[in-house]
Every structure is written in C-alpha cells, then in structure tokens.
Image (cartoon, rainbow over all chains, first blue to last red; front, side):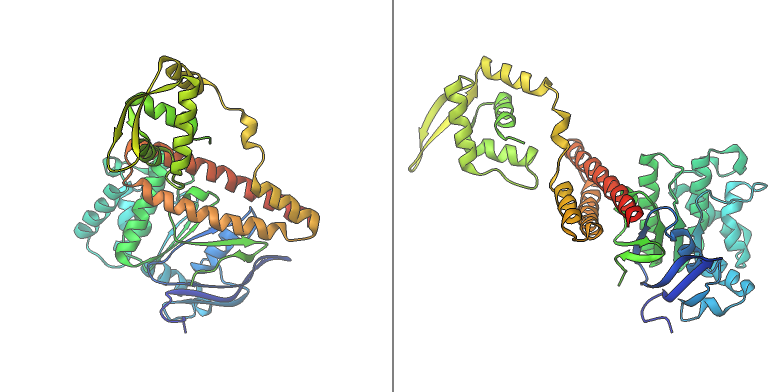
Length: 227
Length: 169
C-alpha cells in the first residue's frame, strides 16, 4: 500500500539504462499538498526519477505506489491512463500538439476524461488566464513564443485537478520574473487542490518557492527526503 | 558593514536623537541584526569630534540628557564620498564557508557534507525571503533581492564545488 496518507511513494526505486544506474534504490514519500524540489548535478538521475514517478518508464527494481496502487506493476496502457486522469506532467520543452491552438491543447486532458467541450473550454481558458497567456489562447503553438507555449503546457498539466504534478525544469524557458510568477501560480493552484507538486530544477530560486528539497547524487538521495 | 556611515547618512535626512537614529537604522539596514545602543552613541560622539555632526539641543527628561544631532556640511561630504566610492570586490572573495570547506578537505572531514548542510540552510533563508518578498515595499524589496542574489551565488558555488569534489572522489 501507499504509506498513508501519502499520494505517491517509492521503495527501493531503481532505474537502469544498460550498465548505468540512473536511480539507485530511492525511497521517497510525497504527501498531498507537499511541494518538493529535486536537484542535483547533470546526470544525477533527476529526470529518470521523475519519469519513473509518472509511470513514463517502468523501473528496473523497487516499487512506485500511486494512490494505493502499484504503478510499476501496471501495463503501459494502464499507466498511461492513470497519468492522464490523475497526474499532470510538465516536460522541459513543453510538448504541445502543434496542430492545435493553446486552448485546444489545454482542453485535451478534460476531453479525454469525458468532459463536454463547452465546460472544458471554459476551464482551459481559466487556466491559461491564471498563467498569463489568455491573450494567445487561440493561436497555434507555432505562432506563440517558447515561454508562452511552456505556460500553456503548465496549464494543461493543472487543468484536470490532478493528484500529483510532476514538472521537469518547468520554468527553464521563461525570464526570471515570469518564471517566479508561473511558479507562484503552480504552487497556488496545487495548494488549493491539495495536489503534491514535484519539480526538478537546477535553479535554487525555483527551489526556494517549494517546501522540501531532495538532492540526488549518482542516483541516490544525498540530501533530504520529504516526510 | 560598519554602521557608522549609514548612521551618518540617516542623520543627513533630518536631525535626530540617538534613540530615533538607532530605530531608523534597524528598519533600513539591520533587518536581521539590530544595532546596539552603545554603537550608536559611540558613532555620534565620533561624528562630533570629526566635525561631521553637531549637537543642536540638549533636553533633560526624567534623568539622562538627550542630545539631538544634526549633520554638518563636512558630514554631508563624507556621506557623498562613501556612497559613490565603489566597494573593493575582493571583500567578497573569502568567506567562512570557503574556509570550512577548505579545512574539511585538508583534515579528512567530509567537505561534501559541509556543502550539503550549508545548502539546506541557504535554501531555508531563500524560502523565507521569497515569502517576505510578496508583501515587501520597494525599499525592502531591494534589500531582499540583494540578499537573494548573494545566496543564489553562494548556492551556485556550493553546487559547483560539490561537482568538483565528486569528480575528485
């Protein structure tokens, strides 16, 4: 079981790429409403950890518990379904569908979950507005700046009120002032919904917006572990 | 930072008693470490000797006398010279942190551990400042962002030093 009242937890989590151990027997627990920064040098296993937490990769060893279920035991299709419904993921370089407008991109998770178009659009616009990109909501991703696309990707990760938000360098493409506003918005929205927020970052300024710190070194936890 | 010249600069704004001056100093420049009264009175007496300030009024209210000071033209010139004189950049070159890491390395203690512990402390202070920033007025904001930038610089060094030590290990 997920250790109560954790929403997400790992036990002995290990991810390997060939002979390289990217994540080495990591135990972590994330409570609802927790806000954790994951830091560490390049190649320390930060992104691999995030991908394993989100079920994007299946670990080579150990357990990933998400909402009282062993995520690592599910098939790829099942993990993908859990991720869509209950997680929000933000990748380093966004990953919006280029054929769609920003608002259509943000509506996607809601529509996949069966929400009707009108309320989905209205909720998506609300999120884009909270992230300061409502004025470009009807443009395609190619017609907006990298920073605007990234903010839409963040809106898409938050729009369906997920239980966990996993973000990999979410503000890397933003100027420092916008980055801080966007972080504040992410924190406010996840706090209001009680979602656990996990942010991989190499910037301490970003980490200073979050309550807990985990530092990885050679795939192991060198500093901290959230309660 | 020596407290003397900022105190003189506060006196430039308007004449004041030592007590008022101390309060203004604490509000503006000493958010984390208030100035001792003794330092204020010592500084005022030095200003008087050097001709940077003079006593305009002596009141006696229930006991000790209260002296009100005002800045002199020489004092104003001293403030200008201080404000415009660039600081020696080498003032930032050595720190207690560097010294502790260096001692850890040469004594067989864990330098990585020193860095990790300091990182947690620094980040804690950054969190505190990030929280304070939300309601800060423009002057406070300058002080907060100054401290944040220095903490961030230290943290970058902590990160880099950690990586170098890892490579050596």
